[in-house]
Image (cartoon, rainbow, N blue to C red; front, side, top):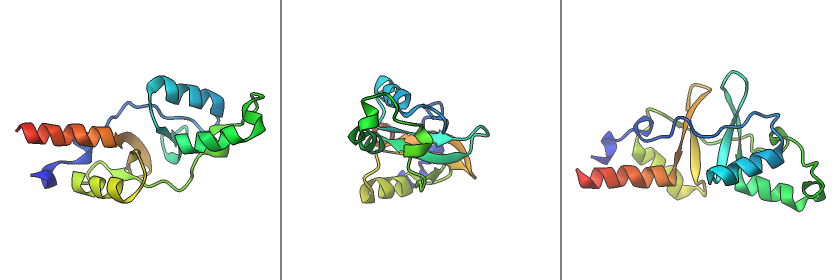
Length: 133
C-alpha cells in the first residue's frame, strides 16, 4: 500500500521559495515567520537553483557581517547541489532519502522546474492517512 503513495499527492505546492537576490537576513526572517527549516531557491523562470537551510543561515551568523546587517544575498549562502524528488517518486523513495540523509525537507521538481516541497512532517501526515484507511 505504501508503494501506491506518490510524492505529488502529499507535497506542499505553495510553500515559501526564495529568489537568489533576496537579502539573506530577510530570508532568515521569513524562515522563522513560516516556521520552516529551509526553502528552495528558484530563478525568475521557476527553475530550482539552490536551497537555503537553517544550517546555511547559521554559517552566515558566524560572520560579523550578520550583525552589521550586510550579510549578502541568498545566492551567496545557499547550497547549490540540491537533492530533489520528482512528483512521480514513490513515498518509499522519499522515506529512504529522509532516513539516509539529514534533510528535513526536499524540493520537488518536474524537470528543472520547482513545483513544491516535501517535508518529514508531510511524510508523517501521509503515513497517518494511510493508517486510517
